[in-house]
Each structure stands twice: as structure tokens, then as C-alpha cells.
Image (cartoon, rainbow, N blue to C red; front, side, top):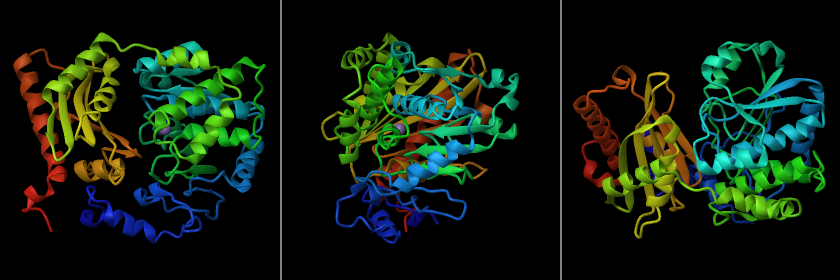
Length: 428
Ligand SMILES: [Mn+2]
């Protein structure tokens, strides 16, 4: 039943639930995020998969050894590294580090994503570092010969935000490796799994592999310097510029500081916002409603390439005094594919609010039992297909009505959690 899933506004039931997880070996130290990760229940299983849950601790040698063995078993293979459709710096840099590690084992990796690089910082990162990630549209994938790949790898995602995975699986390509820090999603049956929901950044996990010796970084190798710079950017951006970093992130950053190029990182960070992103932020400011320290804003229609304006607007709204959580959403339309989808982002500074639980509770599941979104510490996102109502329409009156329908429905679902007391009819 949903009701015992959570009360996202106080988190107490979450804490109570996770206390029963057999994971108290680290009870002497403060691992504050554990209580926010009720889904992190996996541990070793018979097939040798391994998921870690305890942060503030280097990966045990056993995990590194299991990854090393997995790579060794697939010497000479070609692998696809699948990123979420809209990869962020953490995903991009983590994938690059994996690619460089795998190269040691003569495994050739191609890093691919289905959507776009829409944040100016991501574009700058890829351009300035020469990061080897490529867009594979769904259409172009269908024309590709996938039989040349012996395996695929998921970095910073578990397939739920990756349109490529189902197609790659249909082609019979097995999942070799999953490395992620989001709450555990579906059972993926990968050969090697390292999912650490209480770790802030996938870049931190990959950096720990480097430190453990899976690849010896060398400052005279340009790709190593650039990858270290990308990892530094990845872990900074997933820890809110280190403000939410834990000891392990600082240790990873400390290690990377020996190799990274500070000037290059500065250049990446100086990317400017486009005018259209500024316009979306402006709309979010105008449209926001603030209730119970939540700021909620619908921004109407926006183009597919500007999708990343939504999380940026949420990043901005959460900085308002007396606001701890911001949710921004809009209808994103892709003119090429005649596609429309509601996309939303959540940002929170409230430690007891778990974005993953909040989004799942707010929007529930589709008819296939799939949630519309999820999250990690302090951030989350959702995508709601518009089904029969989807498809761009030139008639502005019609478009306006359609937006209002979705806008009110989303607000209603969010406000049900924001103001639980106003909802006595459905309360328990
Ligand atoms: Mn991440």
C-alpha cells in the first residue's frame, strides 16, 4: 500500500523502514543519507552481483576485484556504454573513466545517448575536453548493426531514463556492468553491479576505481588530464559544488586534484545560459506558487533542445528565501518526432525529503507499473507521456487549453503532498 511508503514531508517512516535493513556495520559513523534510501536492499547475491550501500568508505577490495574479473572475462570485446537520454556531467565523465579503464583490457567502448546535450555546461564539457560521447537517435539505432557489440554498460542510470536500453536488449546484447548512485530501480541481471544510493556522485565511484589501481592516471597523458577534469566537474555538479559532498567525495576530489586542469574546468564552468533558458527561468518566476516552503511552477511549452532549462529553473527557484523545494515542469515538444511529453524537475535542500519517494508518491505508476520518475539525493525528475493528447497543434487556443489541463492535474497531485492536511478525504 502506498501510504506506508512514505510521508515525504517528515521522512520518519522512511527512517523506520530503513533501520531494519541489515546494514548497520557502519553504525559508528554518521551516514545521514541511509535513511533516505529505503530501496537500497540488495547486497551480495548468488550470481556474484554486488551492490554497496554504505558511504564514507572506499569500495572494498572485493568489489574492485569483481569488476577487474568482469573486465578480464571480456577482454577484446566491444561494448556500448549507455547514458540517460539527457546525460549530465556526472554520467558523461563516469562513462569516460569507464571507457579508459576498459581500454586497459582491450575492451573498446562507445559512449552513446539518445536525447540531446541541452545544458550549456554539458555542451562546453564535451567540446572543451573532447569527451567521446555520441548521440544515437532512436531511428539511427534501428539501422545500426548491433551484432558487433558483445555487451553493454549502464553508467549513472539503470535504464529507466535511457530509451536505448530496450532496443539494445532486444538485439540480445547482455548487460555487463551497472555503476550508479540512484536508488535501485529494476532488477537488471548485470554481470557486475555497483549501485550506491548513498554516494553523491557516480564520478566519485569511478574515481575510487582509479585510485584502487584499475587505471593509473598519468599527468603526461592528455586524455587522463581531461578525464580527471571531467570527473571533477561531474562530482562537483552532483554535490552542488561540493556543498553536499561527503568525505568520500572530498577524497575523490583530492585525488583528482593531482591530475585535473583547473583552467579547463574554469572554461567549462563559464558557459553562459542561452536567451531561451533565461526566458524559461523568467516564466518559472512569474508562474510560481509558494506553499508550505514548496515553490511550484509550470512553464508551458518549450522546445526539445531547451529541455534542460527546466532543471535550471528549479535550481534557481530553490534559492528563494523560505523555499526548501522547487518543482518546475513544462510540455516539451519535439517537432521532428511529433512528440510531446511533460517533463519536470525537483530540487530540494530539505534533507528529510527524498525526491525519489516524493515523485513516485506524487505521480504514481503508469498502466505497466512503471513510475513516471525518480531521483537521488536533493534532485529528481519525471516524464509523463501525453498519450492521445500528445502532438503539437498550431491552434493556440487549443494548445492553451491542453496546457491548462496538464498544469492543473500536476499541481493537484503535487499539492496533495505539499498540503497533506487539506486532503482529508483521501487521508488515513
Ligand atoms: Mn549522477
